[in-house]
Image (cartoon, rainbow, N blue to C red):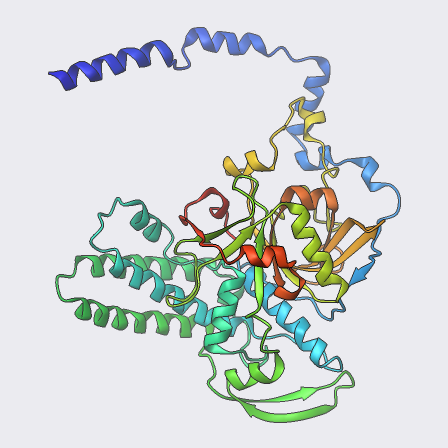
Length: 458
C-alpha cells in the first residue's frame, strides 16, 4: 500500500510540473510565429537551396587565401582512406612515413600498406570483443559495460595507441605488398557481417556452461571463422616478401627479402611509436590530470588510450616545438565543424547560420562536449604552423581524403578554430615540457568507453 501511495504522489507531481503539447500550448506556439516579409524570403530560399550555401560568409571569400607557413614539415604524396573510418591508421602510418623520409630523404614516393595492419586490427578487435565477453559473462546483459560491448562489437575507428600496439606486434609492409581491396576502402558491408557474427558468437560464449578453458577454446574456434572472413574481404597478409627500394630517379637502391618485423626495424626508427605522449584539450574535465579510457584499445593485451588533459595553450606550445624541428604529429579534431571543403579551410568565420535564421548558438567548447555536440571525430597529420610575433595565426594538416580534396590534400585552420575544435595531439616526448612529462606519472582516472568525449567515432 505504501508503494502505491508513493507512486500516486509522484504521478500527481508530474501532472503539476510536466506538460504535454496540448491545444492551449499549441495555440501559443502558432501565435508566436508571425513571419515578416524578410522571413518569408528566407523560408523560400531555405526550401530550395542548400542552407550551407546561403550562410557562407562572402567577405571571407575575398582577398588572398594565405598558404604560406613559418614552419612546414617536408612531405611527398597524399593518401586516401576513401569510404572507411581508418583515418587513425592512415595518420599513424603517415607519421611513420614522415620519419622514414627523414631517415632516407632520397626515397621515392612511398606508402605503407594500410590494408595489412587493418587486417590485424580487425582480427585483434574481434578477439578483444570475444575475450571481454568471456571476462564479463557473469554480469547481466543489461549491465552498462555488457551493453556497450554488444552495441559496438567492432569498428574501423581507432587511436594512435592502436597503431603503436599493432606495429609492435605485427610489423609493417609496403603498400604494393598488400594492396587495398574494395572492402578495405568501403568498410560498411564488411562490418555489418563481422558485427553480426561477433554478436552471435558473444551470446554463445555467455551461455556456455563449461569451464573457462573450454569457453576460451570455443572462442579460438570462432576466431578461425573471423580470420577466414577477413582473408576473403581483405586478402591474406604476407609473412615474408621481397621488396625493391627505389630512389627519386626510380633507380633500384636495394632488393631484399623481409618479414614485416625486419622491414619495420630497417625503415622506421625504434622510438617512432614508443616515445610519444598524448595530450587532450577537454574543458569538461580537470586540467593537468591523466585519464585512461576503459576498453579503448585494439589489442587485448595492449594499452588503453591514456592522455594528459591540458589547456589548449600547452598543446600549442608542444606542437610548435615539434614543427620547428620538422617533425609531424598525430592530431584529432572535430573536422566537420565550419569546414569549407572546397578550399580546405577551417574557420569560425566561414558560415553565419545565426544571421540567416535569427538564432544564436552560444555554447562554448565545454558545453558542446558535455551535450554530445562536439568531440574528436577525425585524425590527421599536423604539418605546419604560421607564426606572427611568435604566436600562431594558422595551422595546416595533411589529410587522408585524397590529393584532390581541400587544398592539395591538406586542410588549413585558423588559430581560433584550433582553440574551439582541436582535441588530441600526440607528440614525441622530447617536445613536451618537463613539467607536463612529470604529470604523466600520476595514477590515471579511469573513464568509461561511453563517456561523451569518446562517443563520436573517428
